[in-house]
Image 1 (cartoon, rainbow, N blue to C red):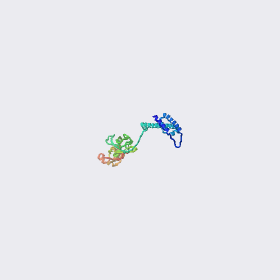
Image 2 (image 1 turned 90 degrees about the horizontal axis):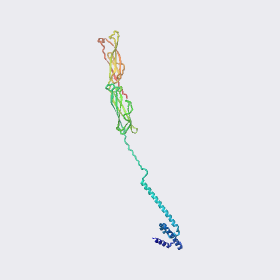
Image 3 (image 1 turned 180 degrees about the vertical axis):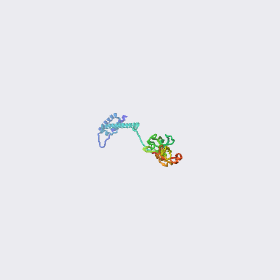
Image 4 (image 1 turned 120 degrees about the horizontal axis):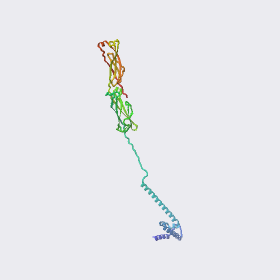
Length: 343
């Protein structure tokens, strides 16, 4: 193998080449060629891969620069080797980075957001029920009358589909202003119950009924106010009544005979009492014997239980003397006061 190589080198050197217009001595040409061959051989021992490159260079070119060519080639080889090594390192770095990124994945969280609003129909609704649930009868009259204590039951129901808050009850007759009623918040279909009392007045009886209104107020979503009302009417029995008592209150002994007789003056005392459960006005006294028709007798108006009295005289006549007694009847009348109940 090595002999063939040197044979090819010798054949190349013994086949002279000359550039156009150049004239070189053949002997000098050969001497320079052999020097080059010796250099190539030395280099081949150190760097065998360079032999093919140097062998392909024309002999004339080798003869002109026998020393510069190998040095230039070495520099190029070193630069190519360094570039190849750098490219390999860079490729390795990129490969390592890619593999590292594939193994670890992204270091930041990836999020996405979206929202959609669907409107819902909100319905506010309240219902109030007010009912008469009994009374206390302090005077044991077995009838609703003045000073009896009535109980009212209130039931508040949320008839809407949203919760209501700040629930308060108002009732002027019961003197309720922003009163509580079981709960101040109601969810849909929930109900709250409370009981309050009221004392019947004479005016209520005079009106013949007790009618009043209650209001419930609540707050819904977005501070929307909602109200509900309820009216209750209680019929109150009107039982007007008067009593009249007529009594002999003495006499004036005109003839001073110490005996009741002709021309003596009798005094009658009349006592009128309102025994009913309503007020009476225009109280009037009638007594035919005393010639009294619609006569006043003290107070003209009487509240239940009130009393008035008066005195009227009568002069004894001969008929009375013939009869042996004085007999007469009196009566009293009054009108029921139609009153409006307190609001």
